[in-house]
Length: 208
Length: 208
Image (cartoon, rainbow over all chains, first blue to last red; front, side, top):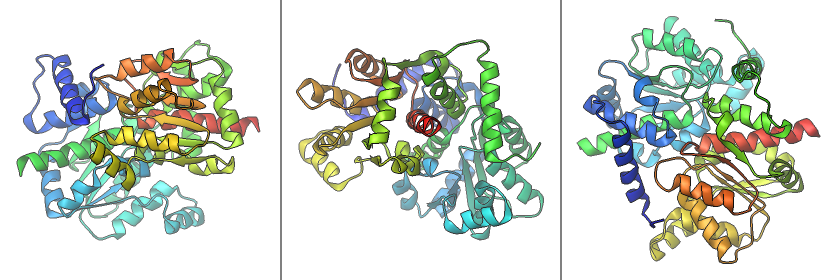
């Protein structure tokens, strides 16, 4: 096996992905995101399942450049996102799921920590982008609070994974009119959510 | 949609997974691991692709209970593993990839940070379990150092993902005689690696 730098491996990987996708044509602002998700998962199904609401990529790029708060549902999604790049643009990232006040709130009110974490995010009073890569609970709570009058986030990466309430939560998000990117169906995950954010942030670099 | 606790959602998910797998029969010590990986990815392919070397699950369970050092290749894999449970057994987890000395070593010697991080892990002089969920480089370096005389780790979770050198690195690991768990083929990831470790740690709980 040839010894290759990480950058050379990445370039070669994207070449192979392009080859495997054959003559599929993607919208230019979506192509890099779709390919990065496939790079992260080695799962070509994402070429067919990724949903983008109209204009969502440019909405998120503008938000990242103007400085936004990205809230992830898990520490794992947070760990997968290129924080240095976000900071470069004046954006920041938080994950509230393990915060003491969130845990206390969840115990006292017998709600899930995911729910309490979404409530805390809305209290930040900042332009928000939600990044959901694990449980549908966070996504459902988010949609419920918006339905009850909470201010709408700038965008949502809605990539929970699993077998219970996941497809339903994604369908609700896609029908909500909120700018969103969603891997339709059961698949998703913290790695997928992080890859989507990173691809958009790298796109900002390319465009700047 | 019914409001369900996270535990109820998890139980229901495992029921659905069991149903989807039909009358497939798995070895008792492997079944929980296979199902947890499917739970994490919503990808049934793992029912066919997960390789377990002989006795590896009980080797890792014994190691966790006796206190071992788990070294992950990424912060994301580390973030996905239930650290509280590991600590309960006196085991610990480290990820060296962003350590200053690793970065310096990589720059000075023009090697990858993944390579430098594996070297640092071997310097710990502790019984090691490697958890690889991202780049094949870490896995290849590990196998190379063992070939050159480094002491063998207790086990390796070998779940790098991707299109370049990944299948080759996994094949080398499976042929090495080192106790290992490997999702054959291109798929894998930090989430898969973390799910495997967590399933084994939960198995320790069930058995204790």
